[in-house]
Image 1: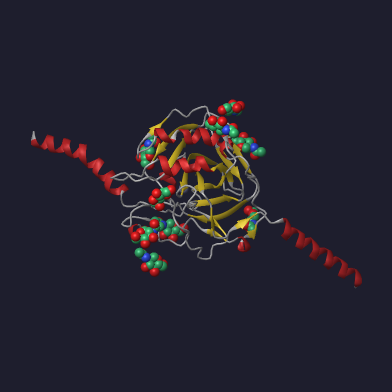
Image 2: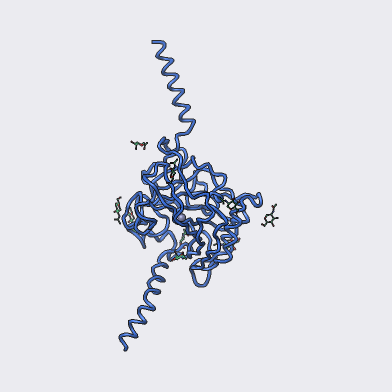
Length: 313
Ligand SMILES: *[C@@H]1O[C@H](CO)[C@@H](O)[C@H](O)[C@H]1NC(C)=O
Ligand SMILES: *[C@@H]1O[C@H](CO)[C@@H](O)[C@H](O)[C@H]1NC(C)=O
Ligand SMILES: *[C@@H]1O[C@H](CO)[C@@H](O)[C@H](O)[C@H]1NC(C)=O
Ligand SMILES: *[C@@H]1O[C@H](CO)[C@@H](O)[C@H](O)[C@H]1NC(C)=O
Ligand SMILES: *[C@@H]1O[C@H](CO)[C@@H](O)[C@H](O)[C@H]1NC(C)=O
Ligand SMILES: *[C@@H]1O[C@H](CO)[C@@H](O)[C@H](O)[C@H]1NC(C)=O
Ligand SMILES: *[C@@H]1O[C@H](CO)[C@@H](O)[C@H](O)[C@H]1NC(C)=O
Ligand SMILES: *[C@@H]1O[C@H](CO)[C@@H](O)[C@H](O)[C@H]1NC(C)=O
Ligand SMILES: *[C@@H]1O[C@H](CO)[C@@H](O)[C@H](O)[C@H]1NC(C)=O
Ligand SMILES: [Zn+2]
């Protein structure tokens, strides 16, 4: 009887306890677990040499003509957003199986499984993860894609330690004073009041917005590419990063909703702000992009000069 009772209590309490303690090993907002501590708490991966995010130095970016356009399917479909979830450290939208991403020099077909956001503290402080020539943007949207061989299973891709297991599409977000700039962002942010606390989720978001409608104004043939990691523990170095050059413009009022509506997983409650990791060392990695027309221009001038000098011989 006692044995049964103990087993029952253990089954009841232990999983909860394990989830609680393991998820509090890292955070953004407390000195004891903020991102400066991750390399000690997770030394195998968060202290690796190919970490994300990074600062992109545009003068060091190298041209690569393999970086062709992408083929996105399902991005125009209004029925791909399944639910929106306060994960305790971000806000995440779960995507259904209708979407694919290929092309863009990715080694195969990838399946989008979720997107989530990183932000600062309203208009006062920016909160993108990647920076460009030191400039930090207001927010950053990450679409997380899993190589098709892992069947939409992020954990399987992480466990395989496959450097091309995941592909992240990153969109920088800039505030604009133009009201109602994007109706879709108004719809997306209207759900935040339904998910103030960690674990809150609502499925009432179907058939209203598509992925494309959130990405308006971005030329998706222009992007930076490098190899890096997931930006939260375990920081696995399994990600092909694509950072699009054009920012998405979102009304500042809508950006402000993120840092004033949702709360971190914390007790007592703390507003979710500054949920981004700082930039990591490049350690010799090279960021590539489409060859610039300037570089192509220089090459053609050199060719013309070479050809004309041949004429003199
Ligand atoms: C983490 O906390 C330490 C100690 O308070 C602080 O110096 C550091 O700036 C914090 N880092 C971040 C990224 O918040
Ligand atoms: C992290 O890596 C650096 C360089 O490889 C090393 O000097 C440092 O001790 C490591 N830190 C931890 C906490 O493992
Ligand atoms: C472009 O792709 C080809 C074929 O896969 C490869 O041989 C070449 O090294 C790539 N070029 C660059 C700059 O990565
Ligand atoms: C784009 O991807 C879809 C789905 O995989 C495929 O059916 C289609 O042929 C691809 N289109 C191009 C132009 O590659
Ligand atoms: C919400 O996020 C948490 C933390 O990542 C996760 O454990 C939970 O399964 C998610 N809930 C839903 C309904 O997706
Ligand atoms: C965020 O900004 C508000 C004022 O807009 C301020 O009261 C609050 O302390 C800030 N939070 C953080 C974490 O800096
Ligand atoms: C993952 O693979 C890299 C090589 O790509 C290796 O250096 C690293 O030790 C591996 N990490 C784990 C946890 O197996
Ligand atoms: C912007 O949207 C809000 C709420 O949807 C609406 O009340 C307002 O009239 C709109 N403003 C303009 C200039 O369209
Ligand atoms: C998606 O929904 C919007 C309205 O929210 C509508 O204007 C648009 O035509 C729909 N797109 C498709 C492909 O059904
Ligand atoms: Zn992210």
